[in-house]
Image (cartoon, rainbow, N blue to C red):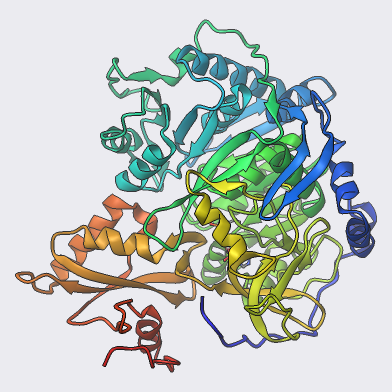
Length: 633
Ligand code: WT7
């Protein structure tokens, strides 16, 4: 991990205070009091949250903590979909809108009530059973952001199958690796995803990715192109809706143990292979439910839009499980912020009367660049609360979001969390003073801190490592088939979960997250491992060696720059640069494409042969490389 970094200059005394009415009507009315109550009785605090949900059998113990292994709601039996669906269908929410989907084309909209969603989930769950999918089996979901993706996830959870959703922007190798690691029995996909008016052939990618993946027995295909339907290879492939034909709209929920796995979600690590983060049932449910209510302050009348794809943890926790457990109306948009024009998001907000809007800093910075005239064309007065996630929300972007979108009226919750944490951990709760540049404080239920390598809290204003001191319900339980990698999170700094981020605690106790401390690059909010990109490059016949760095970018936060040594017989050219970029696109997917490639004769290495990316980065940015005593020559 990096040793030190410059603390960005921000105005610490500057803050915004929302109208007192926000605090008066919030689920958490008094942050300080709630936090103290939590500290006084952590188990009691979480028990109170859990009791709001329905259980087939209650727990005998709230928490069992055997460092670094936690069990939550020990002995309890439940099904998360019972809380997302049955619970609402049985009460006043039966005909409430659960989900509104929007596509790119004018007029493309689908609305599902809780009753309808419940039936669809049960039917698809019964369909999966017909394919022989049973409790504990892994199912890979590689789909666009359509209601069927959510239906597929919930159907898996209904029958106790473990889903592994892979973002539709990943390429063949990335998908293949994930299918193989999880040993998925079934892959669910669609013929195409639609993005900026173009179709992306997902099924073609799946066809290639299931080669050498012997665990896969069936591929379920959602056919969206009605006029030009894809041909199915019947020995292996089944149509999504055919699978739902002739089955019951009832499917008894599988009785799950609190600690039964709910899903695996792969995230980048510091090696070339992604980590399969494992989340279990009860703790994840309670954590996402509690935060949806208390961080977003979700009410029954809200129309809530989180712009993340369900392929990321943000989509799992805050498009699907959290808001549905809380009985919310969730908007799903297979849309991009700048297509067909930079008004696309604002149009949806106006038309659907969105009240809570959760998006990413990279999108906000793009909107800033194109100017206020775009949001000003639309009526955004329905907005009540704004949220941000994925990377630091820099003060300039905060100000713009607050003023141009929130009209200096809506609180912004800048939420820090990770795939591993499952739920939001640090933010400024609705009603509390917001300090631009700072995410905020630990939410009640969480003890985050900024420490040095020995685990000692750093002085205010000094940089350090972001850690979590206590176990929390929705924490990852392990890394799939690689518990050593799990232990590493808890081994690095004594007594703490190490998040891998650098942070500063300001004098008001607010935490400012600076960025990653390790070999991960966050590009437009997506976590990408330098090692993954490097090994993709090296798999090209022209490449002998590669080193990848993140280069600060005003829009995307970071972009990827690759330094490449060519093999003998190959010479640098623009054509080769384009080939290499394309190669990464095909192997890992468009999100991991380098935006710059530089050919080198030599890479800076330590005497032991480790590439010193830090030196490359310093040179690139024209700054002091720091300690280079280990550099060879
Ligand atoms: C990393 C986790 C959690 C959902 C999306 C990303 C960065 C996330 C913030 C924030 C500053 C943030 C961190 C973190 N990050 N939210 N509000 N402020 N940084 O999930 O792919 O697991 O990435 O995203 O660096 O470690 P992920």
